[in-house]
Structure formats: C-alpha cells, structure tokens
Image (tube, rainbow, N blue to C red; front, side):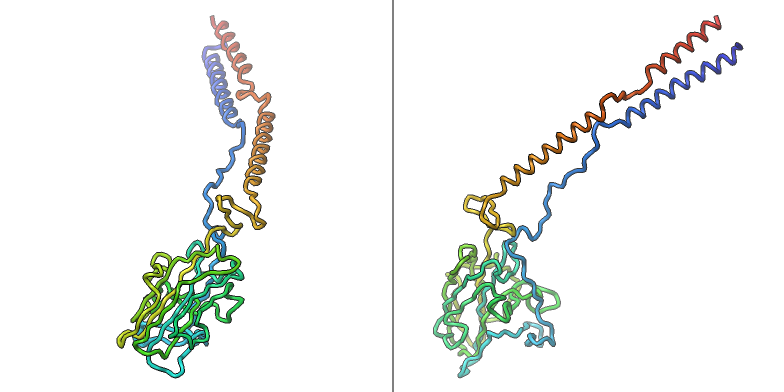
Length: 328
C-alpha cells in the first residue's frame, strides 16, 4: 500500500473516531432522567375570594335620568333624587342636611349587606327631625336591596374629573331634610347595630361636614372619626347645610366562609376543612412524585449514555496498529 493511500486511510479512521465521540456525546446529552416540570405559581392573585361580599356598583344617574335631580351652575355640587328626601311643613327656613349610612367590605368597597340579612342599624335623631318620616330614629335594614326601592342614593366618597362631587358610583343610604330654621341644631346619636349578623359589622366611625358643600375627597375608613368628634351641628346664616355619614365595615370571613375566633378558616357549614384539604393535597402530591420517580427510573434502566462507543474505539485502534505494522 502506498504511503499516500495509507495516510488517507489513517486520516479517515481518525475522523471516524472523532465523529463517533461527538455522536456519543450528543446521544448522552439527549438522555434525561426526568421531564422538567413547569414552575408552579405560588403567588395567588387577589380576587373576589378575599372579601365576604362583592362590591355593589351602581353608576350615578346622568342628566336626563329620572333619578338625576340638579347640579349647581358653577359646578360646585350635584344632587340625585332620593325617595327619603323630605321638606318640613311648615317650611321654617333654608336649613338642610343629610344623614347617611355606608357599609363597605373588607377591601373598602361599597356593598348592600347581602351577606348580613336580618341586621339593622339604628341612629337616634333629635326632636328637630321628629317630623321626618324616616327619622326619629333613622333605621337601615340589610340587605338594602330587599328593603328599599332605592338602596343607595348618594355618592359621598371619591372624586372623578367630570363630576363636581363623587367618583361616579353610589355608595351611601341616606335621609335628607329641608326647611329647618337657619339657627337650628341637628343632632344624632351613636349608631347601634342589632340583628342576626351584628357581630360581623364594625362601626368604624363618622364622617361629618357642616356649613358648606360636601367635600367627597375623603376616605370613609381613614377619615372616619369617633362619635365624640361628631354627633351633629348647628346652622348659622352663612352655613345652613350639614351632612354626616355613619361608616360601617364588614369583618372577616372571605367569600369561602367565616373565620373562627382562633383564626381557623371555616367553610359554609362551619366545619374546619382546611386540614383535610392540606392532607389530601399532600398525599396526592406524594403519590404523583413517587409514580413519576418510578417511571423515570424504569425508563432509564439499561440506558448507556455512550452507546457503542467502547467497541468502536477498540476497532479503530486495532486498525491503526495494523496499518502501522504493515508500514514497518
């Protein structure tokens, strides 16, 4: 065999050896012991499950709607029709006012008390309002949607650029009064909560403003004050208007059930089922992991990460040695 042919053959065998190594490496890299599992989402998105009652959203009436009443020419205030708005007879003066109750869920959203039926809020009013058919005292029964044609009638909180007052959604149940003397004193007592779910409603406080148009750029929770800082107002000639809102908040539970005194989450039947759910989930996860592990081990049994590489390397080496001896 000529030197050139022998060199070519030797080179080819070397290339074959190198190529087999590359193929074996690729084959080895392609063998996996287990398919990768997608990352689990540990962060639970905030949803309606975090509140005991969904927000009640009712837009304020637009101009032309039967429940739209009036708006100031200078854009300083806006008013909506309230079936609990009454005028004193005889009409004694320009004194006017509004007394409201607002109930919010755990997220601070306005609600109508669908989850607290047979519960009543009572606010005593003084002699000055004994003529009002919805006063002396003022009572609010929940759920509002079952007891009133107009459950919410006022937009007392929040702002919206296109409105002089409010954020564009009704949030309060009110009584209104007109025709009081301009030096009258309007008083109201502390709110009392009674009934089947009274223990689930917290009296946050009172938001009171007197002698000027109501400023809605306030927060019902953060700006609520104790009764000692509210309780009524006295009119004067340049300040013949006043308003107050009793702020209530639904306590605890979430949409999936109440919360017991020791912090254990209870289902709708009052039974603590969280531990059962955790045990079932853990058992199911363990079974899946064990099954997956056995499947992977079975699939990998007998797999050589470099199949055929040892035999091929020996053959190539022997051929090289043989060729070398023939040249000697």
